[in-house]
Image 1 (cartoon, rainbow, N blue to C red):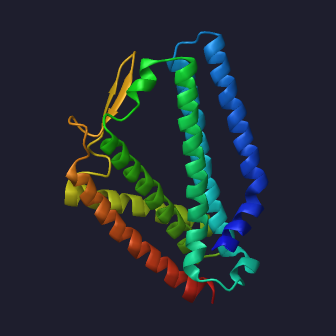
Image 2 (cartoon, rainbow, N blue to C red):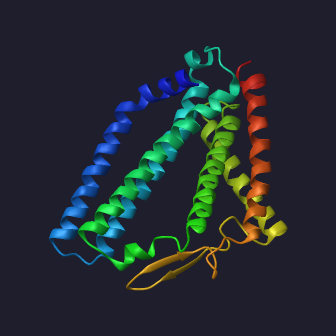
Image 3 (cartoon, rainbow, N blue to C red):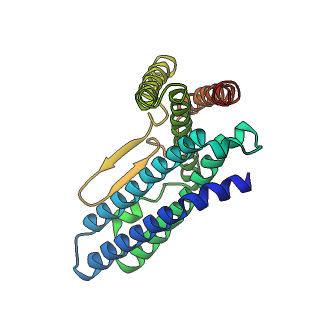
Length: 247
């Protein structure tokens, strides 16, 4: 697994490091001008989180492009490794990079609060430690499940020729999203974040899991349902990798 991670990292290191440098320069510039020009606190915060959201989106794109490349790479397929590692390697790299991005976000928020105290930043802190941990678990699973859907769609798409591949992958992804969302609404009358309420005002923004600051039990039922779906998708991918794509 370590060798696969090194392979994926070395092939994309320049792009990742360049993107990280651009993100840091952008965030430093926004913070600097926000403090020195006395911008309203909401303005630099908006740009700050837009930058980090864009970086998170780029990480997702990077991850599924890496997975797609590995499926089509003749040299990678010759490596004597188990098929599950082909799925796990880009996922693990994705979460290592996501952990680094999360650390950067937390450091930036701390520095911003130190340089320019704001009630808006204080309101972003979860009401309790338990709520923060549970919210982190839900976010982690949401990203993981999204990546499994993308990987599965790409795997199915690679069963077809190059012209049809992207269209089949997109169609499979959209269909899966629709069917799973419909099933969650039908079975649980809810989705994974159905209990999250947002309260937005001109002075602050508060995010709560519910009126009591807890995540509803219904969400965990949805999460359990998605774990079962995720396990099924992984097993189908392993079958396709072993029996179809390597044939």
